[in-house]
Image (cartoon, rainbow, N blue to C red; front, top):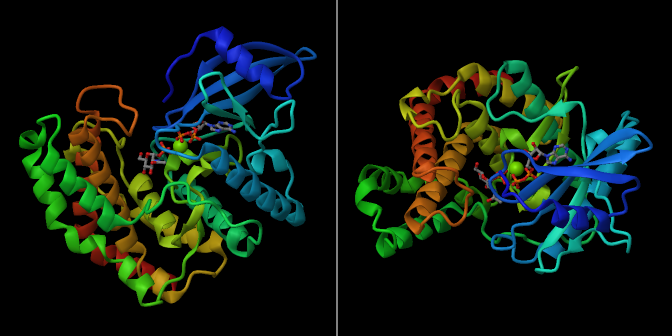
Length: 371
Ligand code: ADP
Ligand code: GN1
Ligand code: MG
């Protein structure tokens, strides 16, 4: 989601990037929760060509210039891989940063905010709710391939854009601090959600303890593999382009798989006000497990495969806690569009964790069939 900006301001920003032709207009675009995203249209020799303009959220990403440089390194590496594979339409398969007329990967506006510009990937779309198991498979396969492409990344060390991003025990500590401070006097309204979050504390340590024991490796991961961060081709349905590279940094493959479980197996929107509609879709889970294993091309260790279900529970729990914390703190992190928006989001997440627990044996039994 994006706030609106006056057209002359958007025109000035768009004109700082090395785009030929005439600026026709720009509109807020997409359903992201973090950055301000616009689709800008240019007339290039009689053809209307779109670009994505994004103002990076610098309350969340404190070093936006280093973040854009990360993205340049990652996209250059993946472009090399895609080209080596001989895949057609490279600029639809990896994000392409458009440079400014000065040859920079970003533009700084008069208020000091950092903007970037991407080639718009046409003929593909992102989904907030999945429709078919094939879409689930394709999305997971593409996120798996993304992970595989980064396994031999040897460019400059990537900057950690949000420290401890998936350190779930820290997320729980943040929640406890928010409950204690209760700056908006909201804690009494959410006693059940607080109790639920606290009762699941052991889950918070489930993957970190494996990393500490050296059982699962750190890799370069995406870390925000929600469904609307991938574009599926309109015609073939293939997972075309992985988006939202702001949190690409060292992490666990299981974080990427877990966030897909969170967003793909839920049959309703993340912000559905009636959490009783949340019920894990087992065939969707099966499709992403198959797709991710295929995309990663056999690179996942048995210790990782065994934790695919736990990862889903963990990432969903973590996200639910983050929404609850933001609700208690007055909604300053995630973009909201209505009262109690973060609370509705938190409730769907906790309902999904419960449903994953209820179906755990079935899901685990399916994973065994894949090994
Ligand atoms: P946020 O960090 O706020 O989630 P994203 O980078 O995910 O921002 O972008 C928001 C939305 O904009 C995406 O979900 C997608 O629909 C759309 N989008 C982003 N980049 C492109 C692109 N290069 N081509 C087409 N659509 C894009
Ligand atoms: C945010 O940027 P977006 O909308 O793709 C958030 C994710 C959350 C997600 C919940 C940088 O993702 O971590 O899981 O919302 N991104 C950041 O919908 O915090
Ligand atoms: Mg996004």
